[in-house]
Amino acid sequence: MRCPYCGHPEDRVVDSREAQDGQATRRRRECAGCARRFTTYERLEDVLPQVVKKDGRREPFDRAKIVEGVATACQKRPVSAEQVQALVSAVEREVQELGEREIRTTVIGEAVMRRLRELDEVAYVRFASVYRAFRDVGEFMTELAGLAKKADGGPEGR
Image (cartoon, rainbow, N blue to C red):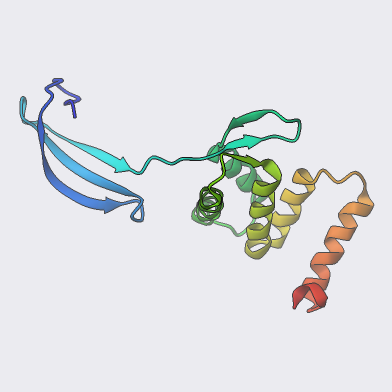
């Protein structure tokens, strides 16, 4: 590791500890050249699949896009930023565990909706209305009726 201050190539690790809920290792280092200290973080390199869009285009998996969509759906709802991050982390883990080189946006969208439905039903409906691109009010009402049955303990709620 090169020192960010003097560029010297050697250092020693002064302290190591777990960071970011065990997803990274934080290391305090001391430069062998100038003796200044700096911090590095090590994390496992994620191997995430290419995302296949509805029109067939492929692009790299982008966590930020999912965070943005979920955060937008959760605006003015009692959902914390930590809950949004946890939801997106769970979706990202699920995608990684599939072990596929390519994954369709529908798989990601359904995983987000499944978790949003448990977290906040209003946010779920907001996300679903954009994600599923309801063609008319009838489709939207059908989705709401399904939620109402679940809330009333109907067949979908069992």
